[in-house]
Length: 163
Ligand code: PNS
Image (cartoon, rainbow, N blue to C red; front, side, top):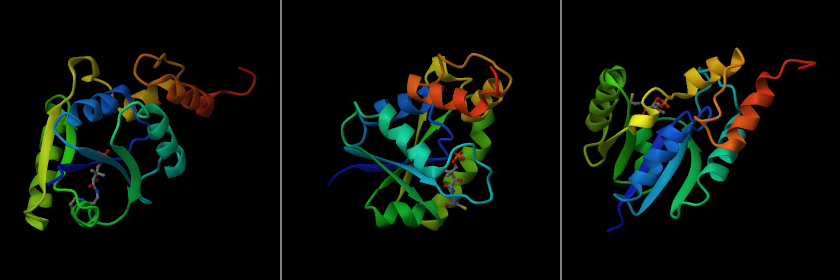
């Protein structure tokens, strides 16, 4: 049986923290499907297509990783694509309560799909898509937190005319 995991998220945009999780997750799973939730109620900086493109560019070196978007329940999506696990990264304590809640609800909805957590690498403990966007908005340097292609795109989003 192939071990297939869905790695779900917003990825708005992908960071080195996400890339680290996929790299390490590939040691546990034969295939990882990185799946972006289509969530009209959450204001995103990048369109889904742009986020998928950044993911594809950033993870092109890692074999057996595919990219997709989904709406509806995560466990239904996972079942439809033949995955037996949900992969999530866990940062500092602050992530724990939310992730625990998500995992328990997903388990209640489908007991055949296990949630698997990888602790975020020490280097990326304080890296998140939202903090990166906030820093970039005010001109902060985020070049060591995201791959160069993402850095360029984030910079372009926040470029002020004449700067
Ligand atoms: O990157 P994020 O925003 O922390 O990802 C959250 C995500 C996409 C994993 C979560 O919101 C999700 O799975 N949403 C789909 C709806 C669902 O199945 N929710 C959990 C059970 S109610």
